[in-house]
Image 1 (cartoon, rainbow, N blue to C red):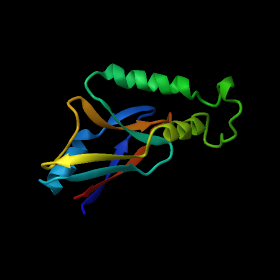
Image 2: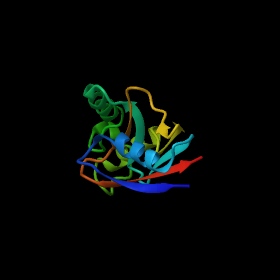
Image 3: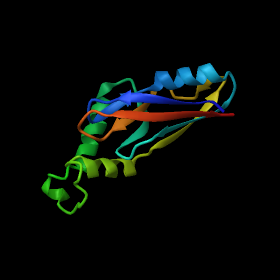
Image 4: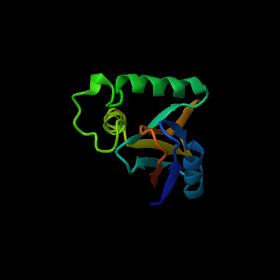
Length: 140
């Protein structure tokens, strides 16, 4: 069963698309049907399948999550205890808990079965840049 690891360099909070890399991995390893599992090895970022045509979608999602889970220096978040790694850390863990760290994508004829406007994204929840590791696993 083919497996690889991708490294995604982030520049702070936001959505980072890696659809092309995932499709290249699938094409290089099968021309058949199967299942692509995508897993991110971190607890303060997550994975999404989301629209990749209009950049406003990425901006609006980021704004929504910032309002939904503010930083711990916001008075509304005074109840949070975990603050060891800065005011964006615990909110990042909450955002990850609300989303997902693993995706399952069907593969047909050697291609991920994504919709016309769907892209695969790493959703970075921390303020500072990080190097995130994503595992791609293909099963038949």
